[in-house]
Length: 206
Length: 206
Image (cartoon, rainbow over all chains, first blue to last red; front, top):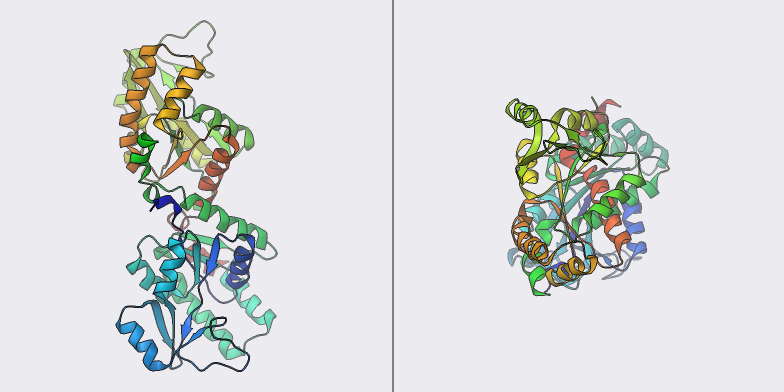
């Protein structure tokens, strides 16, 4: 298979209030070259949710079976429930030539980087810690306790920055700029020598 | 000095017929964020040339003095004359925040990479070896002997591809595409984590 035709495995992380969700939505709408992975979970399906749309719903036993067979690209346990990315679907997407976008927190990102060193890791950040706090309070989605917890988690997330390839600052009212940053990163990565070593031979063949 | 404000040191290499000269001209015209380095040479100044425009003209002794004092970023000897990039000017340009573009062959590029591991190395290629030969014959600038020599040199250049960061194919009639590839590469590089490690601290300061 032509190496250049494979899609990228793109991991996007970022603290609460970084706007990564909106940015990913924008990427997905911009081109059918991007695909989004539907996570699997062992938590019960809510009334307004659909299997294969919001999540793939598995029993706890099914999920653990998949983990033990190495069928999860990454997973985490949160509040007693498993959440993770099914491996087979992810690989099929990349092989089809689409760039697979995964919105994942730092622990899952590290699992992916270990298993797929070629994964592209991007961290989205609010302009500053102060600005992040402001955003979390303004959006009014969380309790005071949750806000303080999210801010605390951010410190840990930033400590992982060195393990990421790129960092994009999502400034207030400049979502377009952040989106074009991400486009440039993905565009450039497809031109990286490490992803195009086949050229050393194909150059002389054609 | 703010790390983010430093310009990039960008090395552009490519075989004869890759169109790198035209691409670099286009970069230079596109933004005053780019600066081009004027090379120094020990060859005599021609009647239609100007000091500080085509080259900085030095005597052989002056050039060797600069080499021995480490004042050349890279240099090479060709047909009995020295050619090289003055270090001081290059550093001043980068410190001023401009991206310095150097059009340099593979040996010089390796010298720069050793001295400045952060340099960004881009190789421009024609679509194929066959296409390259066609371009060299069509442009009618070289003798048959020169063409064969240039094609031979290309094999050596491609062998250095692994040492470059990015590879851009300059397809026939698609100069715009190659230029936008280079813009994306430079844009993405300014967002690389290794060039933005200051964010780990500045995020909490502002």
